[in-house]
Length: 294
Ligand code: PLP
Image (cartoon, rainbow, N blue to C red; front, side, top):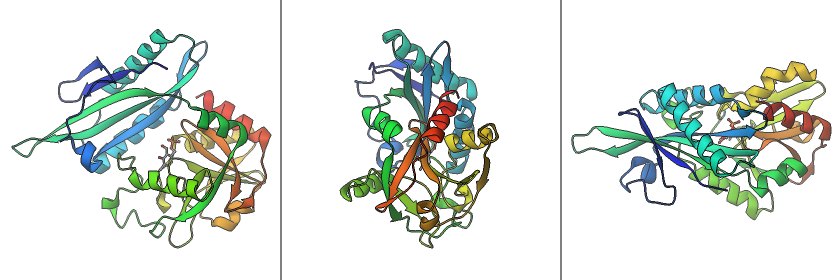
């Protein structure tokens, strides 16, 4: 897959194509050594037309994350241009591609001698890799991990940036590695007081009869664009969608469970902490179709 990169200068309102293989970021950039920035990853589907799945939901969350970190409001036309330029570059290089992701980010940038900062942005493409296609087809296993804080802490501690999609993902990455060491595909974060939260890079949805349930974002997790897309269309599947607090026993006792995120779409959670969860192949396929349609 070809690599496309655009650099986005928010102050000058400039989007320019750059070389992903060449050095672009000064080591003094605050994203590089503080993780001080925000990002989104969108799924792009190419059929008769180009679909950027949940384009608006992503941009709205990007703006909310910017606000939480005190970064400048992202200008829609600039970020649209960045996203569309990456898509055009990738399609021109490989017209046979049917799907890929685009990751766009805004960093606080470098600290200037006068104390001001120079935010900078970028966007580049990411592949739908073999791990994702395998998970879509066969599902995944997970182990539960303590997230280390109680549910609903976010409103009392806004500096924790719970619910913002920041570039500080070292903890999420470490949780993924820890899960792999336990022989599982994924981690499932649980609040210290026992409320199920989310995966390190995905939301959890369970089915109980005709109800889809997902943890309340206010409990201390990222409000997912994929989860919200599913909830917006649940009625079309004959299902009711609700936010709810639940524990691990409700996940294991569910009629079906899914990890949902932009790149994965919906993948069935087949096993949690060694306990089997029923696989609902039909609903998995319907959810994947629904998400891919955007
Ligand atoms: N939760 C976390 C921590 C994530 O990183 C992600 C994915 O980026 C999600 C949930 C799912 O969000 P989305 O559906 O917007 O990809």
